[in-house]
Image 1 (tube, helix red, strand yellow):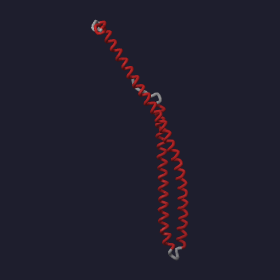
Image 2 (spheres, helix red, strand yellow):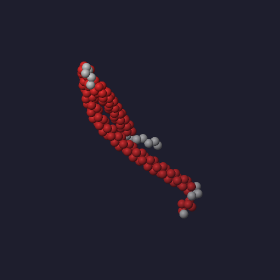
Image 3 (cartoon, rainbow, N blue to C red):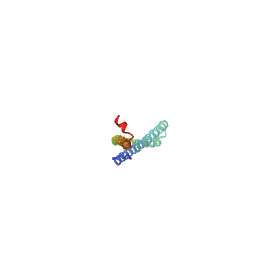
Image 4 (cartoon, rainbow, N blue to C red):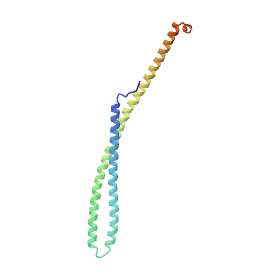
Length: 157
């Protein structure tokens, strides 16, 4: 007799939900990493242009160039602020995704526990049926021996 789990459909659904939650978490972490890369690149760009700005500020006739650099700094600040907002949003979504991963994990483990419990009950029932069949075979063999006159002495002793 083959073991079949009565809640196999639910178990597969729970596994799929957990897989999807993990996938979404991974996607969000990847998005977070991309934003962090942009922020690092903005910081490096700001540092590079700050060095240029400092060098140009010492020159007497660099007024237009300095204004252009200051305008570029404002643009970099806007990019930084926008990406910081994106990062905060993504981190909130990551927190929600983590909770979902934990919840789907627990739901799958609960069904998995039921599956394990049902399998143990199945094994116990199969062992009981096997023992019953063995006992029945022994009884039939003994009855056949008694009918043939072979096992009667064993029975009396």
